[in-house]
Length: 284
Image (cartoon, rainbow, N blue to C red):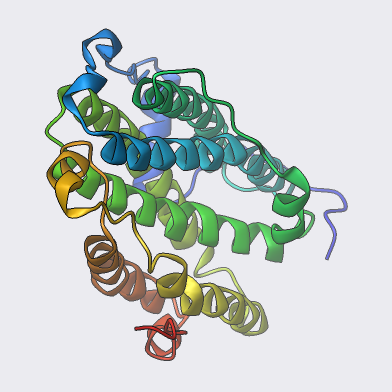
């Protein structure tokens, strides 16, 4: 199905996001990121192995956040061109500005850990090959479910654990800033899911369930390996919020089984079965 002509009305979703949107229109919201005391970070307090792991973490985060700018621009375009409620479209437009700020924050933290400028490479061809174009309602549904509802819920859970473990005040403040936004992005995904659930036909639901189930089956394998520090640097790595493999696996399992599966099952996607049949790493 292609877009064709789309009729746009001044409608709202029947979710809490509609009330949030009305407050935004009245100028009552306007989230402002709290300043981070970057100059207070002292890399000399940490051994090089811990700093290297933290640099790798923040570099990878920067890549993901920067890539999400284009991804959510595509999602926003798809939402607009499929006539999604205006509160959902409006919330989606704000994600891109959050993500570019996150990318800059993470690059800055990576540079502080490295003690020198850091550059990252974005393979947009690979990203484009793995992301379907938002040129149909089916693809828009899948993109929002995968990257906003599920993806941002996973990100919020992992970054929350990073923040909980971290004791360095600069790093902890950074994680807190990221989490505050990721929670809003995840809520956008779940509000969209609540909006779409009663509207999709059985064939559409079945097709979406298959695509989401395939993604869920690969989650554990994708997040199986964390960043394991040598014994001499484990305390320092923890202070920087770096997640070891055991902790990362636990967080993924807890958020998938405690939050994501139930929410997806409730709207009829039946992903609990997919999770039980998930691909396990060979060395598990």
